[in-house]
Length: 325
Image (cartoon, rainbow, N blue to C red; front, side, top):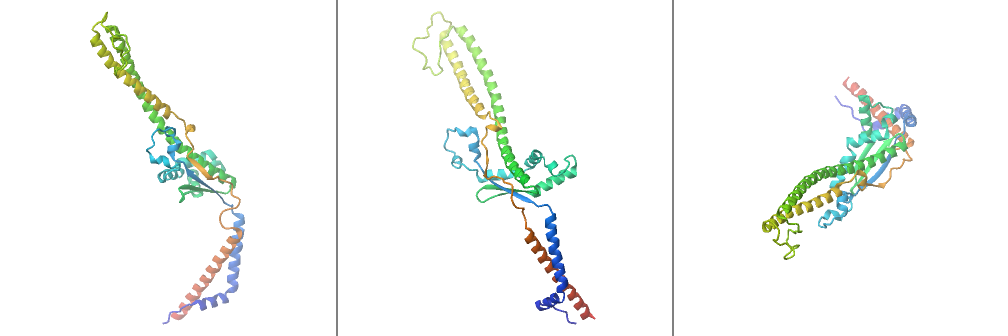
């Protein structure tokens, strides 16, 4: 029993015998593709590219820095690690929910946020419409696709701005928490300074010593403190001077802590913007995807190829059945 074989010549003969059917299928598919393209909602893709500022320059703690040893200050742009953090933030669920709420997308897409199915549909639609990638230049390229070109650009602009705000909010929150810790330490130092002050008042009255005594002894004038009319002045000078040394150190520490609090005391608006647009999101002028001409040609080509393949397969099955008989 011989198994039937097909070559290119045989396939061409099959196409010639069924040329009318193939042309009908091809033309019908092309017509359906053109009509479908006209009837479907067009999708517009807005694009924007943003670069990342080095967060060290966005932090007011470092703007008036004194140290110059940190080589991270050499680069004004964000490092690879900073770009990774920006990518994590821009793709986060937190940013997505904030953008959906800010742009009122539930209303725009006619969905109900109270329904679980609609919330799932919204998340799926947002994930499908939004895309963010990092470029070889360490920038972030973001796109958003929507049936409304104005809304596509507005949503993408909101994504970049909210991502920037979230990153700055994180930095501000960390600094605020640090400020709270330092502020509590200031209260503790204030208590110690008050105790030292009370103790010095008692000791000065006890020893009848009211001269200004520098802990480093450089402020003392020879012979300024005499023993006349004073109670045990030798011991009094040493005790008062020792306690003043401790108090002076507390006062110095408090001044440093107060300066630190002043540096850390910042709001979100005080921080320098981290994400800067290379290209601003603009409403796209043309719909994304294939145009009507390419869509028609693609449908016609697929229909032609499929019909020839199907007719060849049917002919092969018939030939195989005849051989077996």
